[in-house]
Amino acid sequence: MTHDEIQALILSAIELTNQSREDLEQVPVSPDTALFGAQGHLDSMGLVALLIDIEDMLQDQDIHISLSDERAMSAANSPFKNVASLVAHISHLLERE
Image 1: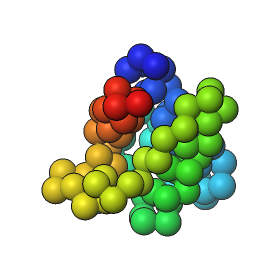
Image 2: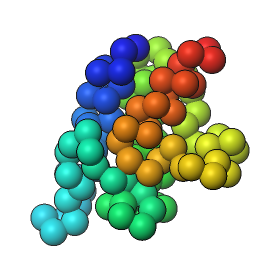
Image 3: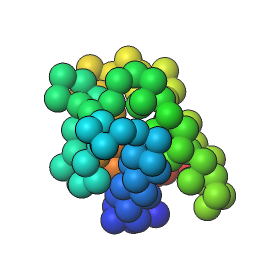
Image 4: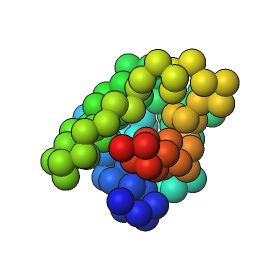
C-alpha cells in the first residue's frame, strides 16, 4: 500500500466516525488533522473506534495488522497523534509484514 492509499483509508475511516458524531463534534477530514492528545479531536474511546474501523478496512483488503499493539501504546511519540503519524505507523507495520 502506498502512502496516499493509507492516508485515503484513514480519511475514509474518519468520515465513517463522523457519521455517528454530532455536528459540533465532527473530526476534520484532512491530512493535517490532530487525532489524539492535547490538540486531538478524539478521546480514548473515539480513538479505539477509529483504529478498529481502520483495521476492518485493511482486513477487507486482506491486510491483517494490529494498530494498537503494546509498542504503539507505550511509545514516547504516539503514532496516534495525527493523521500523518498514523500513516507512518501503518506504513511501518506493513513494511514489517
